[in-house]
Image (cartoon, rainbow, N blue to C red; front, side, top):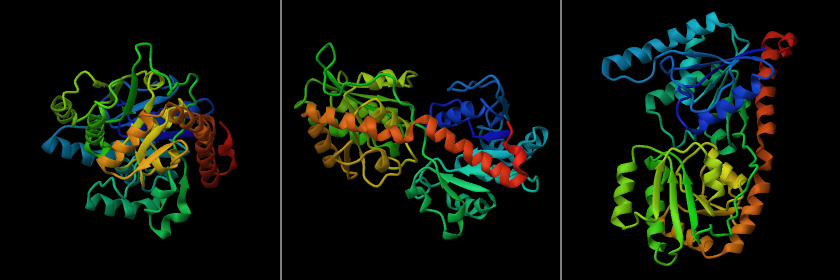
Length: 373
């Protein structure tokens, strides 16, 4: 079977990019797989991809003003040329605007398209006009894949029959954290992983930690990631005189090592799809704190069992942090439960779901001969 996957970019460390790398790597073991991005040719993927995967980089990302407008308007024609040059049995597209572009590009080509939302569209807004276009075009897709039931409820009743729920694959850690133990220097650590953007709530995390810093002098906070909010977060850290206690190391490749060196993962994001960083923290055996009513977070954190769910307020976040920082045994028990809880999303199970969905769509569209690799 020939499968063409599409995503805007693979050069960043985001969750969608990571999930796509897992899917492509799994599929390439038994199928002919190509990956299309809008990046300029030669840009390296942040995550490893198999050598057997053919890469199409269209150079249609970025720029400003008239140049950007030209690139956006020319995307459908560029994609259509690739689809014709590399005939596939099924197309898988990731992320909202890419999904819309993929559906527009392939009108009349007779190839079934599966689109996948990677965020919660009820909260991650892409603009009124784009949302109207998305709602009009998604019925053209063969299937619409979402990561959680909460996201699925966003879409209209007429689209429900085409919905499939497939969460992100969670690699089960070969090594594990010991959340009850301080490190060799006698210190303990809260870790947060994510883009430094407003909706991630990291400013509120710093404020909450600042209120507890004197009470828990042996604790530190480490926020891994990069983004536009770095200057503001640095100001917060300096204002609270926490330069020695709060670190912003930027993007780090070895996230498992960072998780295993931590005692607690905080995830105050205001909206998500199905967050990889949180899932991997739980898989490493870390207790977690997150916000109520957030897609993926509410699935991963079982309140009072694998962690604590709180309202989007600094005072409740502070209280939850204090509760876990003060109780080593609670951290240990939550961490043990977390490792067991995420086994249901183990990579091999989720990736097989993806392969089954793609194969079923190809067979239904082309006939049973497409079941052959």
